[in-house]
Length: 328
Image 1 (spheres, helix red, strand yellow):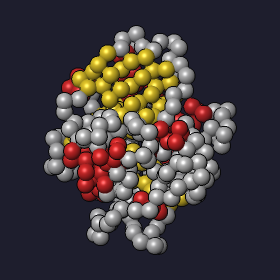
Image 2 (cartoon, one colour):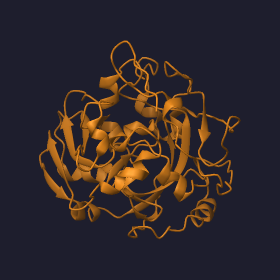
Image 3 (cartoon, helix red, strand yellow):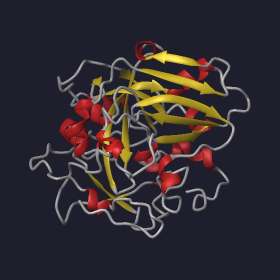
């Protein structure tokens, strides 16, 4: 794999450099649905019925979520696509690396340290987190900054459920996520692609939004290692790298926290990283995207990218009055 070096010394793979080693030749046919926000329950249930648990990992079912925007009304990606085409640099920069190397990750025992500006800090065992709130199924679009997208059925509950339990102080304005960085389990941590551990962050109102999901599973089962086991966040209106995987600490801060990609290349990756087709990445357009599974090859079908990844009705008010070109 070729990695080009920029003048500032940051080594970041181009989108064209981190394509998978191989693509599955036969893809399951995709249903195209026009409904998005406001899709009827009948449509949602019909699509959800096609998402049978793959029988790979332990079952983790969730009830259909009533949160507005919790289902796109679109057909989901095949389980094979969703678990074999990933960005998870702790296991390598190629899309197929996580599926190849993440078997070394040990998702149990696991705990998450909650700290910073909260009245009830502490360490939460994974089993305690699993029981903290009822599990829900959320069918979210995932849009990657490199120009591809998927629709994935997650299982979890709103991050706000955990935040309310730890009682943030009035001075807490941001939430930072710290992920596991263990060279023994994660061979990619030995590389210099990023400064480890991987960290991400949200503004408090973003973290408290009901669509921000603390995810423990997908496709009715626990998360596969390559998808961020045993728990991650899923923030559907932001580019995928904002959804931190394999979280070991959640920190509440007054100042905007540093985040890995923003620190590595601030001219390319802003703190907010909202999906915005009108703001191009410095090296490629964000105006359209390729839906994984629909087509492959040189003439793969492209879709127009939607503002906030199609969740504008739900989250647009969070950014009222902001210059979204400056706050990219």
